[in-house]
Image 1 (cartoon, rainbow, N blue to C red):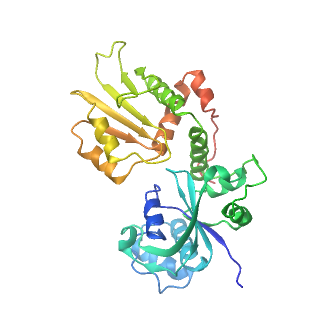
Image 2: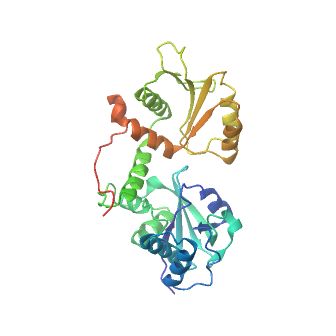
Length: 330
């Protein structure tokens, strides 16, 4: 019996493919414009094809991307475990690879034309993993081996809990790697905040940006959680109405339509959903007669970091962060 391995495959550059991965029983990678790679066998062949398609790429970019494709196409074997992550639900999708490399640009789109079929088995909440596993699985690499955490993965699939908690995070060097892991760890903190406390945190960020805020009390809010304006009385523009959804599931089209209905002439809308948005929700926002901005969990984390130093102390304490300097590259 051959040895089983575990692999992590990211669901697109912005986690936009995770729904397709689950619903269509597959994982997929890019880049586009390289044609069918299923007949290629070696790293050198993959690299040569990439160089033809992207002559402007540096040797480093060619090596990194050809290595990614080689792992996806050749190192991942049928029967291996494969994981992918849903930022919206904060769950890892875990399954078994069910097929060899396929070229199918219509499966999830032209940007990710190469596909491996997967038999999904289970979704495991991120919070159930040990800190060491969460740190490793938070890597920003598109495709990487996760054998170091095979025992934990298999244990969680069987309903067990990891024995070690709070292990220290190992140092890393590249800015992108640190930034990606940092954002996910901040998301871990945010996920534990009570919905009404989170609403107050949103208002605090708006105040840090220079707005005055009026926050709805717990209970029915008639579709508006916060009103933000630049002056003390709410007379000046811009006047912003804010709806906050701090839940695991995505905001829907009806959620956006109901919110848009609260906006009057001259008012702007800000909708924050830590569970993300359905396609219908984004469509409703695009066609809305009033100006509306959608923020998901990642965009909210970016906004928090950007305005963190101007937050009131009690809200800094709610999400305790420390500023550090790291090399941009080594």
